[in-house]
Length: 243
Length: 243
DNA sequence: CGACCACTTGAGCCCTGTCAAATAGCGTGG
DNA sequence: CCACGCTATTTGACAGGGCTCAAGTGGTCG
Image (cartoon, rainbow over all chains, first blue to last red; front, top):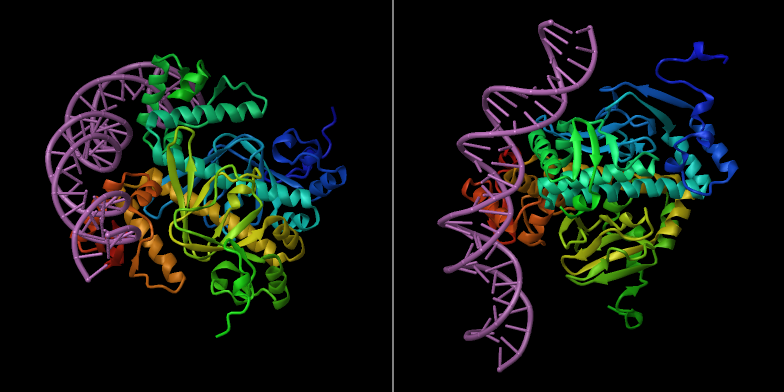
């Protein structure tokens, strides 16, 4: 197999045919249904680069100028908000197919850190080009609006979780949510391995890592899940639902 | 003073000159800077009605079809998310000048309830018309995007609060935030009265009403605020900040 | 093989929820 | 204008869930 052009790739941002939306594996998750071939082509035209982000590295940090939004092509990220006193909270985990970076639109600077929790790859979507395209293609405009609105709804559901649920319920809800999202991406919803640490899960769920661990052990004892470190098997989803 | 046309007003939705953006008192809060008179006119054209919502009534409820977004002209609202088991959480308080309803964009149905916490008045902005306008006027498009993004950022800050702060810190942050927003609207930042009950504050902050009350009393003892029921006077904002 | 990190588990304590009772405030109807 | 009844708020006593601190285990990478 010829590997032409590979020698010209930069380490951080490359143009290549695989970065085309029209042929992307995550298309079904990223894009609206029923986009015409022409519109797809126009999308392809503005998404001309991707970027590799290694585990632990930041895609962007709080305060960085906002230029682009991103779509996770492979891997996963966490988004983290910080208080001046150093307190921080994970506000989301973003899997392949998820959008990232829309927090920067409001002020022109990012309000979160986005950190890769495994080696990952993102599409870079220059936002001013996307805005132009939105002015021309109604389907894309609506999709962008839906993405932003989904983020609003997602966060408010998380607030419900943080504000009203016990530690046990939060961990159960976390596992079920992850399970659902993995299934939507074609993975098993019953068996997967966590990319995030107990501490990151705890930060996301508003509790300490020890508490997360205890809840996993509890579910284990009760036969709801089989958790061996990061390897998770959900044995009784209905039981988790009822917690 | 003549009161022509008043007799023709409907109780729930009326057209009247005062509903024009170009002459609205909340213009500075609602609208982007530097909109041309022509663009303002086009906005006026799509916002043709307002609606009165009495205290305790819903502007919209979870599951309602999403047609329009709203701008609070006068009064205030809370938004509430609900879990099937009846558990609910206040996710925001919306004052005059704030936008409302963008949660409905993602699915076409609202995901929250929006309830008036005092007699209120909103502009009704049909969303499909706003989207059309966004395709034509870049300044308005950007403003809509910023509004949605702000909501995302607002919620993530609230998640930080729910996930990492003590009850005392949450109540302090709540008072300071409200104070800031009131100042931005031309009211005193030091003295105001709460439109929401202790229970609503508690729901917003993820705690019980008794805890809210205790924190108010504590701040009172420490000379940070003077709280007599809903009447609040902030005596030492720096002290609150440091809590 | 060793160092390091993530994870698990235990013991004790504190913050906040729960339950209960008293007080204050507010709107309504006489 | 006042009395009444309701709701909102305050305050206290107590219990429990989750945090803190600590020790020990397991897994991974150099």
